[in-house]
Length: 235
Image (cartoon, rainbow, N blue to C red; front, side, top):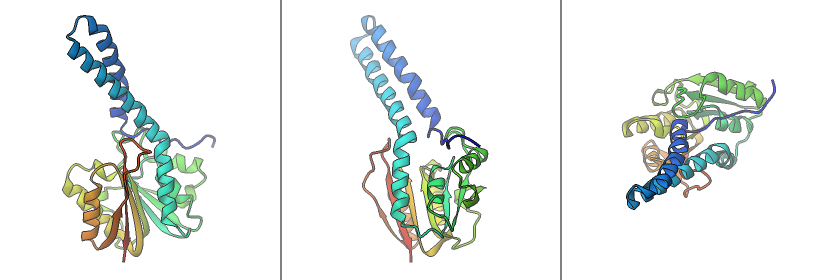
């Protein structure tokens, strides 16, 4: 099998909408500048420029910035190499494989519902292929499941990670349930790292309610929108 793992684009529909709508508004604003009210034409040009810029920044974030931040996030875990880990909402496997690469004597499970709305080309087959291409398939287990009802026993994992996944749940109750499930399946003495761009303060609160020692990073600007990392330790 040849090639390199491909991890797709986050929020592909939104990025595509910005990529098409931004330049279109720019052109319409410039062309209509002679016939439209100047305020309206200016608004169209300004909005188009913002949308086009956001499309570029979000694409660069998915392709480059996220990879750098996830590598740093896993580095900070200080893994021994024999842990049993879980990636909640693993998608096409960027964080999953970053974690697996540090576990020569361990194993990492990736769980997802495989929504293509949240990541382009998201599918079990794509994640399995990426693991094969990375030479890490024997260290990886891929499951289908809902993070609100994790299909694992209490205290199953030494390490739990997640990237840009929990915020996709529709309500605060759903997100709190998912965070409590993460705390439930983490072993005593285990640690977690959750990267997201929304609701991270609520994750901290829910984890502390579950008895974990938890802290949140400063904003991380290598991704757009910028993100925070929530770290926790279970006594």
